[in-house]
Image 1 (cartoon, one colour):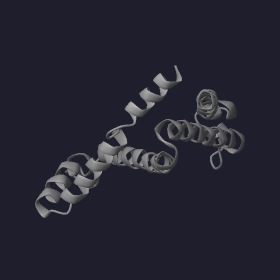
Image 2 (cartoon, rainbow, N blue to C red):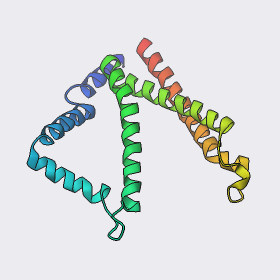
Image 3 (cartoon, rainbow, N blue to C red):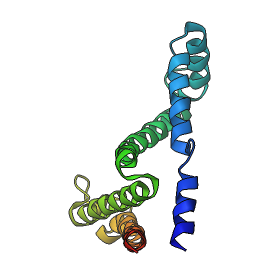
Image 4 (cartoon, rainbow, N blue to C red):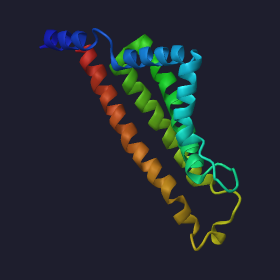
Length: 168
């Protein structure tokens, strides 16, 4: 039984993983970005979404501003979580790195959610927000905290099982 699990683990870790392919793709994209013709094509393609201007005022359209916000938020999450995963992946392997990254991310979200529930909102008073009371304003943060708590618990159980399988 143990030899079959070990053989399966080795076969899954042979060759290029998804992370390896993403690294190769990022390398090729960075090389292509250095070529002027390709760079112009990439800038024009990205400008279709991120640089739409209003014909009357010349300002960015609401859609472009929203897409820039989504792009920045997704990029920040990818860099924040991805860099930690990459460092753990190089030292600990794919499975353990995934479990530790998930547990750390959702643990951080629990702490962040609890702090928001306790100390937010600052600035505008809850009574002035279109009929929302202090509890209703905190509902999204409470939902985030509870969801992160469930996912953190799942990652903690998975880490416990991984450790038990590694010992046995």
